[in-house]
Amino acid sequence: MIELTEVSKVFNQGRPNECRALRGVSLTLDRGGITVFKGSSGSGKTTLLTLVGCLARPTAGRITLDGELLSNLPERFLTEVRRHTFGFVFQQFNLIRGLTVLENVMLPAYPLGRPYRELRAAAQLLLERFGIGDKAGSRIEWLSGGEAQRTALARALINNPAIVIADEPTANLDSTLSREVLALLGELALQGRTLFISSHDPLVFAADQVKRLIELRDGQIVGDCRC
Image (cartoon, rainbow, N blue to C red; front, side):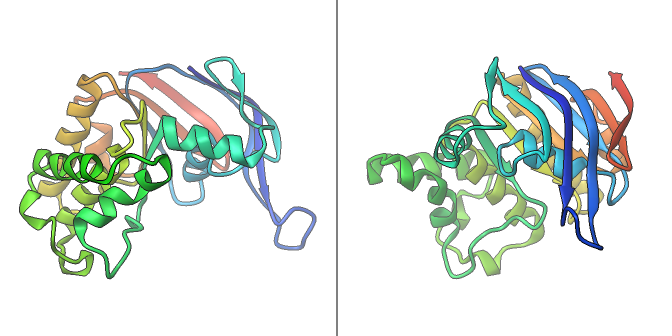
């Protein structure tokens, strides 16, 4: 369980261009299933996910994971939490050009010191699972949008995380590919993983796999529906 208590995030604090991305958000997120954060650009949904995933710290408030306070942990401990607990699918994929698909999937696991042969086999298995095993040796820049999204999903799972965070996972895909990605995310949820997704895509909101829909506007929660 993840709990946020009066969490705020301010960028460029005290400057003329100060931006209050989150304003006193309190929220409890249970394990299991798919939770979607909806809202227009600038609503705060992506900022909220970065805080939940320990990619940033709140300006004020508390964040706990299974009762452990995260918001004041030293960076080296936050790094360990990220590596062992979370997998990330970024909106622009953040895949490394010049590397192969297989190398990109393996990348997050290198700091954990897994034997290379074991790691390579695990990465290949994930690619096969997502239907792009034949692309393992291809350069990232040669992939279609759907193939890049599947590669990003495989990379997010390489460390076997309990929680997957996906920022706008269908933003760069057509409706057919969007439904395919949602089906893949639904399979992960059925396997017992927790998924937190940000989106402004109506296809995502209407997906059968979604169990909770949280709406943000101007950095505050304005809706919370359990589907």
